[in-house]
Length: 211
Image 1 (spheres, rainbow, N blue to C red):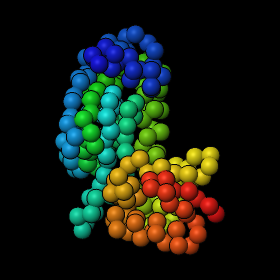
Image 2 (image 1 turned 180 degrees about the vertical axis):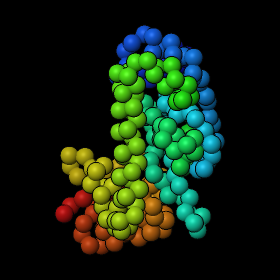
Image 3 (image 1 turned 90 degrees about the vertical axis):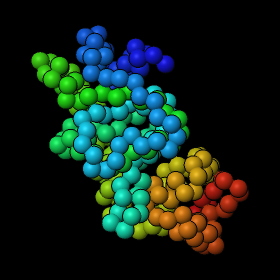
């Protein structure tokens, strides 16, 4: 994918169609390739760039005081992340690592808004798109702080179940566990207990909720 295609895709996702905005985006952005396991930034790093995923997946996580990684979100193709630097004095509040080979469109947020400051309507469109993601992350942090592990696991299963109440574990259990803020061992124990309680049936990677 070349940069022109990347910019057009980003503009479509955020709902911006004006041609001059694409020119402004071109001046303040660049394509970045990251290999699986490569970090994009670390929690607490200074930075002004937000990112749009063109290909691949990125894990956003925080590190607890005892060194445990707590996954906030798995960002995938067409997702925007790190837009929160607009409001946090150029500091990334979480770390980001590529889960697979990933292609990103990196956009310098401050230079972009300098360019479009004369058009509040366009600025509001972009801010609106970013605000949705910020609200999502705020709710994610709230969830981690107030819900116990079993509730988080059940909520994950219910949200990802299909019409037959079946969930396929497409991600490794370790990634699901860290996304839910529990250890892999705790996640496995909870799944086993849910099965013993008659709440789940298990067939390989397929879990069916039967209550």
